[in-house]
Length: 435
Image (cartoon, rainbow, N blue to C red; front, side, top):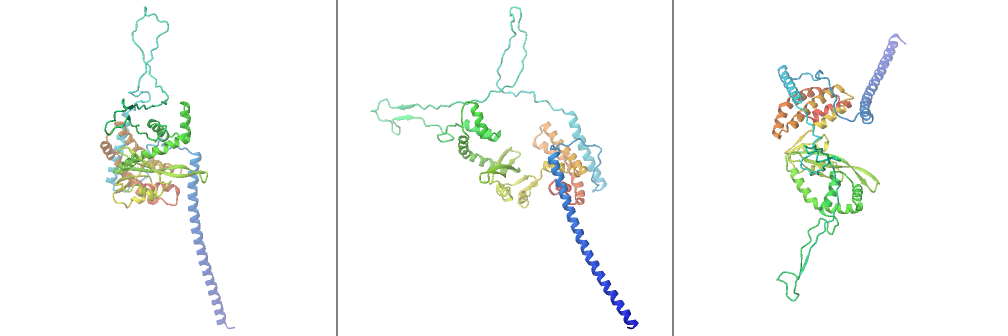
């Protein structure tokens, strides 16, 4: 073999080795990329699980109160200025002025004690207690001291007996007047339940106990037993159903009036419903709709459903401001003309309060600002302001807070990674909160 052939074989061998090494490097790079992606997914899962563990630890072992502890008043703002210096300084000055106005109002007002006052209008039973063995020949009355206590007289049952006298013709041989009968008796007054034992006041008390004071039938049965009458639960249930039918027109009228307003609050709450087939309770939902200004409310139950279609059908005729939490079912109203979704500050605050153990500095800053906003509402309550005066006070003192919020959180949110559990409450402010 010549020297040239040997050199060619060596060169071909080196090329084959370089090609094999290149393929190996490519395979290693692909493997490294797969491992990197897998590591990222696993880290994301770890962050989510750690967030869940932190939440569960708080539910099991942490405090349940959402009350905010006193914060350092010298704490610096966590938001970098995003506006021109002059405009940012103007906002800061308005913010400081609002804080000063709130604190000054709280320092000069002191809540009155009302727990020792007895309401006016209650009947008064006077009991005169004379000194024992007093000789009125030696003493004369020069005054008196009065001490008031609030007493309670247990409810009592009574029987209402309706007496309807019957009248007949004195002379049976004389015919009755035209259109009249020989025997005359007044018609029986209408009763809520046909031939029912319970009267209207009794039925009203049963419903009041059940829905206003949340006393179930079996406890009401015990109360009636203490009052001297034995009534079974099945009897109460039998009275309950026809009364609900009688109240249906009233319910429909209240519902119509609520949905005719231009500002309502809507929420759904869980209800444990007994499933006789499964011999257990199912978690279902009851909808509450409240007309804020008119102070009217009605409840709606649709086989326990919490779907968006349920709330869409429920609020179909409504036009105006709809305030709710961040539940996605309310998104069906985003495209509906004439309906404006309004966020709830209490629900926004709850997300920040839940993030205290995970991102304390940001959460405390948000809670401190919300605390100042709540002080504005307490100011309005103490002054007993009218609706318009309350609105003017909010515009005057709330605007600096909400302006800084929108300015600061708009800058902060893009730096929050959506994969991290503690940043979800922070993202809620832009996705769901003011601004």
